Image (cartoon, rainbow, N blue to C red):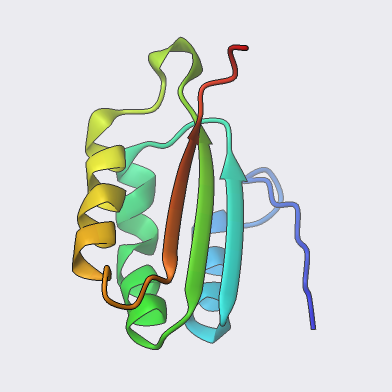
Amino acid sequence: MSNIQILSNLNLPIGKIINQELFNSKNTQIAVAFLKHSGIKVIEQSLKYSLDSGAKFEIIAGLDFKTTDPKSMLFFIDCCVQFISATNLLFRVSIGLR
């Protein structure tokens, strides 16, 4: 069953909800305008648990205005290397320029 949620820090603690969903998910897809390493640290343990359990994870992140920091991208590159045998992690970067 699919469960689509649109989250905002204004009314819900996003990190807590994402962590709960990652622990229980077999297939996660996230799209964000930018990535910050401080945000990745909030979900790191549940993401790794999810990937260790065989779940699939896809994230699409924008690079516009240089807001996405390199540390956050390196985290996902490292995850791709760590979980390469499972082929269950897909990391796309959307630049937004065509």
